[in-house]
Length: 519
Image (cartoon, rainbow, N blue to C red; front, top):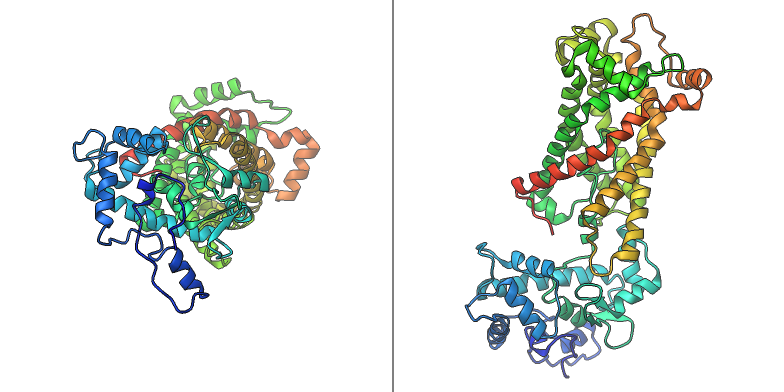
């Protein structure tokens, strides 16, 4: 039986096993049929002639004949073989195989890269081949992307099967489905991706992470998904540390606006129509410039425990709901993320109350966070540390749900319209989508956040009424109208863009410092 025709140059497809298929008395057995088509499973089997074929390919790609393949060598060599790759893709190939970090691949590194890459490609192919028939069709492409929260039509899935652009959107087109059957078999899949850095479809998730990056002060976003590789290599905690550091810097830079928001939520009313300028003037007059950052210390400190607890809870909940997938669907993510948020918020809620009390304090009222906590415990008891707990928990679902829904909608719209050559949206699109979705989430849950803040502040007003959540809602609607539920919204929205921008820049720099690798 002749070996199936391959998509790419014979020199590339010849890298794989050329062994003769073994004879079998049971020609109808599936294993016999598979071996007849490809006796070594298309693997880099290391047979007698195998190293010679690899050496020929290496020499062909080593354009300047210096015994190593650099990015320029790859670009020119692959073009000669009829394969087009972008500069970013070429850099990823070299980076993936460059063990000694000299910016190029010697023969040993080249062989190791091909073998390692082929193993990953086979795992991905099997995960996509949901029918286990040795081929990938349009329905399987749609299901795999749907599992990641990316919805495409059957026509779009067929386009993926028909052709994949190997460079920019006007670059040469390579047909993966060369036999016209609207399916991709293992040989076609392997040959197309032989010298392509993409290893699996979940790269879309890696490009579109946003909860680890964006910190707008309310840590209620559904946690990001981490791949098995990131968890096993320990990259997940580096991402969390980078995200925590970015949040600390971002919150510190926007702390004056955050404190103004809290003051307006608690003190602003029809009779006391506090403006942004007037609020800043009062803060400076009462406590000087340092007063603008009251409550920021505890706000920064609570980032670490909250992020860690949420991540651990999210991973455990994924197991409890019975998901054996690397990534969850949208509904499962919302359920797991909301529950993880409830657990994390419940664990650190006393710190939320302390942050509000510190932001509202007068000059000389407390000597610090510890003094504030002691006085609250002595005068009001333990229950004071859980004032506003119910509206805070109720606010998690609309915030997380709308943020996730809007982000996924914007992501899908961009992927369907503009993702012709890469799932990477670029910095501007990522920031824009994250900012819009977070803003919508805050807008939906803001009335609950305002009621929570007022309940947290109640006991700090001596002799003040201790209203319940429902009574407080009724009182605000009756005395101030619906607009009363959105006091402080202006400074809250004013801080979103600078907070997102600062956290992204700091996050990217901390990633480099911590050695976080991104594909």
